[in-house]
Image 1 (cartoon, rainbow, N blue to C red):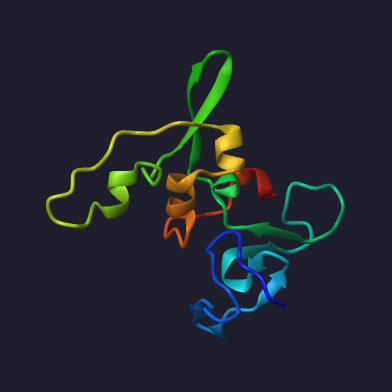
Image 2 (image 1 turned 180 degrees about the horizontal axis):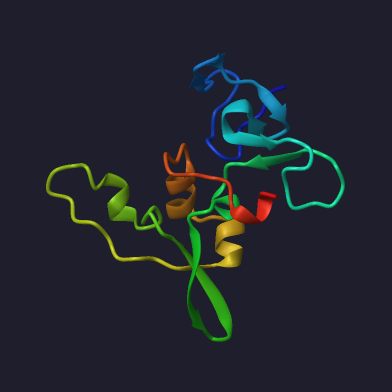
Length: 132
């Protein structure tokens, strides 16, 4: 399958390297390094089925609801991962950025800052709504 992972951007020719070796395709657009599988009975669904969650910002426990503006909720990352300058905060001379908020559609269809922040995010963890 010739594909590109929608989370990390890897391809068949440029695979992620994991502890188990190169990643593989779990499904179209999702590699084995960018998903978590919850076993049956360990998620929010009533049926006794497993759940595959892609490691995207919208499924992460670090997404928090921020201010409300124009009758719409806005969200941010409590680890500051959407603040573009903070993506390079460990580079000397770089200042951490301001907190950036995004509407939910911006989390679902990320712009470049969000997409760059979520690629191989070291802080990603499954959101409590997916747990039992």
